[in-house]
Image (cartoon, rainbow, N blue to C red; front, side, top):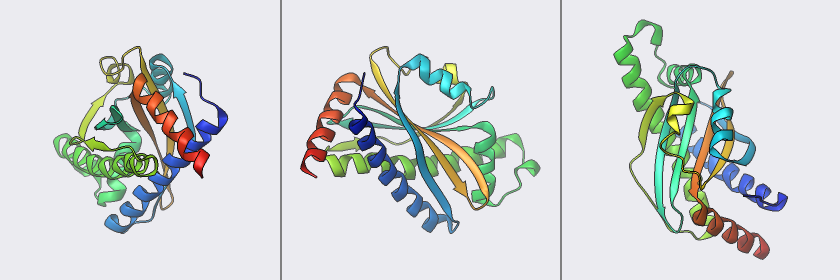
Amino acid sequence: MELTRIQMDALSEIINIGVGKGAAVLNKILNSHIQLRVPLVKILDSTELINELKEMGNDKLSSVNLGFKGTLYGTAQLIFSSENASELVATVTGEDIHNLSMDDISFMRSGTLSEIGNIVLNSVMGTFSNMLSLPLHFVVPGYIEDYASNLYFKMVEKNTAILLAKTQFSVEKLSIHGDIVLLFEVPSMDVLIHRIDQYFSQV
């Protein structure tokens, strides 16, 4: 799917607004200065996405998944490398994870990242919904740890349009990177782009 420069800029702007709202909520809840920004947004197919995620390392990835339906159908995901996930959890909770058992680390990682992912993804998708007048319903977020190739083997169909937003998390002096991935069925992406064209033609 080919998008114009204006359409890509519009997607970037909407995601930036949503990510900014998520950062504001996290700052307030966690009482820790967290900045989120989206330096890169692009459309990919499933093979390109897997190659992008493999660049995050050979370890398992941590992914929070938020399904949505309504005018648009798809899944929003927030993905971290294993190392960044552990650093983020340690920073947010203040725990020294090196002194914890693997079960405790896994439990803490799942709970902490699910909460963070829920806030960020709801902020992003809520911004799409509010700005473009797209009624959406969300399901309870899920948490997955797996390798990049396995993570999308069953989830991404050949006709799925994938919107990748490479996001940088800045927690105090710690630089942590995560990827926001939005998976849309092709008809949903067509609807999204049409609404974007309508919205920005009126602004």
